[in-house]
Length: 90
Image (cartoon, rainbow, N blue to C red):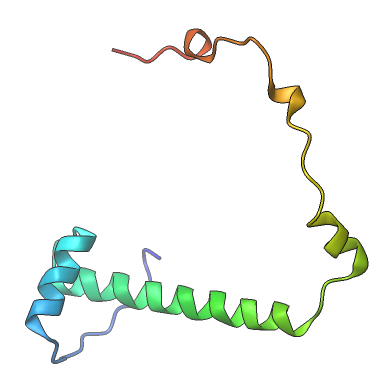
Protein backbone atom coordinates (compact mmCIF):
# COMPACT_ATOMS: atom_id res chain seq x y z
CA UNK A 1 0.00 0.00 0.00
CA UNK A 2 2.83 2.33 -0.73
CA UNK A 3 2.01 5.72 -2.17
CA UNK A 4 -1.37 5.92 -0.48
CA UNK A 5 -2.38 9.24 1.05
CA UNK A 6 -1.61 9.55 4.74
CA UNK A 7 -3.43 11.58 7.35
CA UNK A 8 -1.75 12.97 10.42
CA UNK A 9 -3.70 12.15 13.59
CA UNK A 10 -3.21 12.67 17.29
CA UNK A 11 -4.18 9.56 19.25
CA UNK A 12 -3.89 8.23 22.75
CA UNK A 13 -2.62 4.68 23.09
CA UNK A 14 -1.51 2.34 25.82
CA UNK A 15 2.29 2.72 25.90
CA UNK A 16 2.91 -0.89 26.86
CA UNK A 17 0.72 -2.20 24.03
CA UNK A 18 2.38 0.11 21.52
CA UNK A 19 5.84 -0.91 22.69
CA UNK A 20 4.97 -4.59 22.47
CA UNK A 21 3.37 -4.14 19.05
CA UNK A 22 6.46 -2.36 17.74
CA UNK A 23 8.69 -5.13 19.08
CA UNK A 24 6.53 -7.94 17.69
CA UNK A 25 6.17 -6.29 14.30
CA UNK A 26 9.68 -4.93 14.10
CA UNK A 27 8.10 -1.57 13.35
CA UNK A 28 10.53 1.34 13.28
CA UNK A 29 7.99 3.82 14.63
CA UNK A 30 4.65 4.13 16.37
CA UNK A 31 3.10 5.26 13.09
CA UNK A 32 4.39 2.18 11.29
CA UNK A 33 3.09 -0.13 14.03
CA UNK A 34 -0.34 1.47 13.95
CA UNK A 35 -0.43 1.35 10.14
CA UNK A 36 0.40 -2.37 10.19
CA UNK A 37 -2.17 -3.00 12.94
CA UNK A 38 -4.90 -1.19 11.01
CA UNK A 39 -4.05 -3.10 7.82
CA UNK A 40 -4.26 -6.38 9.73
CA UNK A 41 -7.56 -5.40 11.33
CA UNK A 42 -9.03 -4.59 7.91
CA UNK A 43 -7.68 -7.84 6.40
CA UNK A 44 -9.16 -9.92 9.23
CA UNK A 45 -12.52 -8.18 8.92
CA UNK A 46 -12.60 -8.91 5.20
CA UNK A 47 -11.73 -12.57 5.76
CA UNK A 48 -14.43 -12.87 8.44
CA UNK A 49 -16.91 -11.20 6.10
CA UNK A 50 -15.99 -13.68 3.35
CA UNK A 51 -16.30 -16.66 5.70
CA UNK A 52 -19.74 -15.51 6.83
CA UNK A 53 -20.81 -15.14 3.20
CA UNK A 54 -19.59 -18.65 2.34
CA UNK A 55 -21.32 -20.20 5.35
CA UNK A 56 -24.67 -18.77 4.24
CA UNK A 57 -24.45 -20.83 1.04
CA UNK A 58 -24.33 -24.59 1.62
CA UNK A 59 -21.90 -26.56 -0.55
CA UNK A 60 -23.23 -28.37 -3.58
CA UNK A 61 -23.19 -32.17 -3.61
CA UNK A 62 -20.18 -32.01 -5.96
CA UNK A 63 -18.27 -29.69 -3.60
CA UNK A 64 -19.09 -31.91 -0.63
CA UNK A 65 -17.84 -34.97 -2.53
CA UNK A 66 -14.52 -33.23 -3.20
CA UNK A 67 -13.94 -32.84 0.51
CA UNK A 68 -14.05 -36.61 0.95
CA UNK A 69 -11.52 -37.49 -1.74
CA UNK A 70 -7.85 -37.99 -1.02
CA UNK A 71 -5.25 -36.73 -3.47
CA UNK A 72 -3.06 -39.21 -5.31
CA UNK A 73 0.45 -38.20 -4.34
CA UNK A 74 2.10 -41.22 -5.97
CA UNK A 75 3.32 -39.12 -8.92
CA UNK A 76 5.45 -37.13 -6.45
CA UNK A 77 7.21 -40.20 -5.11
CA UNK A 78 10.37 -40.44 -7.19
CA UNK A 79 14.13 -40.75 -6.67
CA UNK A 80 14.97 -37.15 -7.57
CA UNK A 81 17.79 -35.75 -5.47
CA UNK A 82 16.39 -32.25 -5.02
CA UNK A 83 19.44 -31.10 -3.05
CA UNK A 84 21.60 -31.91 -6.06
CA UNK A 85 19.15 -30.22 -8.40
CA UNK A 86 19.05 -27.02 -6.34
CA UNK A 87 22.35 -26.72 -4.45
CA UNK A 88 22.57 -23.94 -1.89
CA UNK A 89 24.90 -21.12 -2.79
CA UNK A 90 27.76 -20.53 -0.38
